[in-house]
Amino acid sequence: MILLDGKKLSTDIKAELAQAVAQIKAEGGKTPHLAAVLVGNDGASETYVASKVKSCAEVGFESTLIRMAANTTEAELLAKIEELNQNPDIDGFIVQLPLPKHISEEKVVQAIQPQKDVDGFHPINIGRMAKGLPAYISATPYGILQMLERYQIETTGKHCVVIGRSQIVGSPMSILLARKAKIGNCTVTLCHSQTQDIAKFTRQADIIVVAMGVPEFLKGDMVSEGAIVIDVGMTRVPDSSKKSGFKLKGDVDFEAVAPKCSYITPVPGGVGLMTVSSLLQNTLLAAQGKIYAK
Ligand code: GUN
Image 1: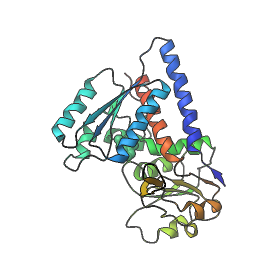
Image 2 (image 1 turned 30 degrees about the vertical axis):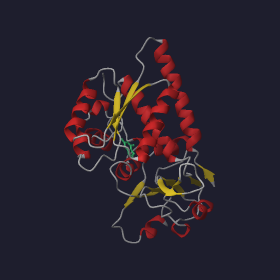
Image 3 (image 1 turned 120 degrees about the vertical axis):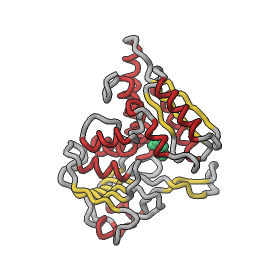
Image 4 (image 1 turned 90 degrees about the vertical axis):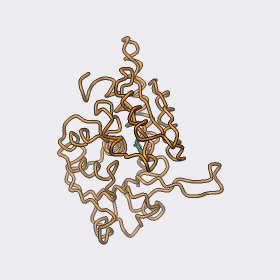
């Protein structure tokens, strides 16, 4: 069993990004600039946004964190998005999800200019991704593709079972793995909350991507020998032995599943870290005008 080491891969990617930024600066170019909007003070969102801002500094990007109160109106947030759309210094920006209930996430996502939508959530980017056109690919699926690529895992002709159909992870992941591409060409089964007997599918899978948010959902008897297991789960569960008061739990019963796998991601230290480095890669693509010409 080989651990898919998100810590090492994301560190490698950040080193590559730092080198690219140094070159841009040496040539007198503009420093890539990512902005993040955080509405309210959800604990997990605070942690994720802080990690994104810190990583920008590590690679030499500029970053701007825009905090807005939990009672911000939808109109106020849409006005801020328009300001960021119009600001030529900002190459890309994200609005951290989830948003407070009184704000429509769909409206917010659609208000972001596709050229600056480095999360890859806008329908234009999702549509372009589905057609195989240049697009920002949302960070978690993009990070998973890069894990498979950098560990030289063959995907062509494999049966991949994706569990979870979220717009952020499961749905784009299923499309990407089915595409005619170097990392892709899989036969994909998309399982979700209404799937009957998920184990029937996972037992037939060469690759399993679990993105449900249900701690330890995938058990040892649901996996065949030699499977590749990618765990996207990151649920906070109480743990009094930790300073923070919680620990992160994946969607995989790691102790039982890992011995059967050829490759598996740990939690923490797997997919989560790749998500941040992928967002930075999208921001560099935005700054360079590589997806949409400037
Ligand atoms: N919430 C959970 N994951 C993400 C992400 O990748 N981007 C944004 N904007 N919000 C999230």
